[in-house]
Length: 231
Image (cartoon, rainbow, N blue to C red; front, side, top):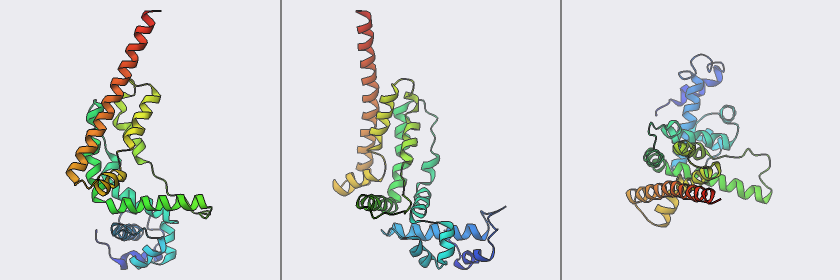
């Protein structure tokens, strides 16, 4: 990623460049510069404000806020950039356990590569929660998280016709506990595991949850069938 700062600040002189070729115009270069700058700061452990990113990128604050009107909007854009191919993940497998394993294989190395970015985003989420509890958040837009919800539901989609809706949702919720940057915090930071062992534990837990949900559903189905037969 290499964007000229001079090219970026020319955006002020060409406010209509976003139409018809924004991917190559000054406006796109400005946005790209800000994303790259914010990513660099977040990968270094910071959770920068829009003003801080503008200063680091040598872009005017007015221009910066035109692209990212709040810190939440900026961090969300950086997170989406970091997630990259995870957001477009797809599987052709009809086996839920295999699909979950494929999702973890795709997502976890990427999440680990951008670990500092996702931890910075988590820090913002926790900070906003604390300020909301204290009544000091004011009208600041909330930073929302939740990509994992749709990703995990998609991964276990083959079970949608096999599990009751409540159990399907519960499985997705259980899998969400072992998917995302929180897994790195628990297994690497607390348990001290290396990347390979972290991934092994996460994959094992995910597979165990999927199999347990299927077995539990089958057992309950057998019980219902036997109860019906004895009536």
